[in-house]
Amino acid sequence: MSKKRVLIVEDTFDIAQLLKYTLEEMDLEVVHVDTGSKALAYLEVQSADLILLDIGLPGMTGWQVLDAIKAQRSKERYRIIVLTALTDSANRVIGKFQDVDAYLNKPFDVRRLRQVVGELLADNAT
Image (cartoon, rainbow, N blue to C red; front, side, top):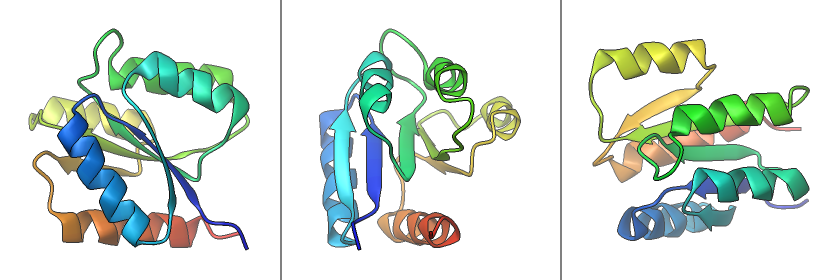
């Protein structure tokens, strides 16, 4: 049985490293990119069981990345966890309309991250 693959889209290196380390401890395959365009390019050739997506990316926002993913892969349904330092309720409302599965504020609690990832990947078991 192959490992579940998680795509991290995060421009802050330290946060990306913490996410990568935490997810690899969960025996997951982890791929990290630091821009939305790199995420879209990756998803052109690979798939992911889960995407951890920062909203405050350079160049294009996480919301724009989500729109592009939906346009690119209209038949596929990705599990999405949004990571953001923005704590306003407007972003949560946008997330609900974007079919976001979970919303974690930075700084995030590692235990909560593990719990949410575990639940989403268990729901996504094939």
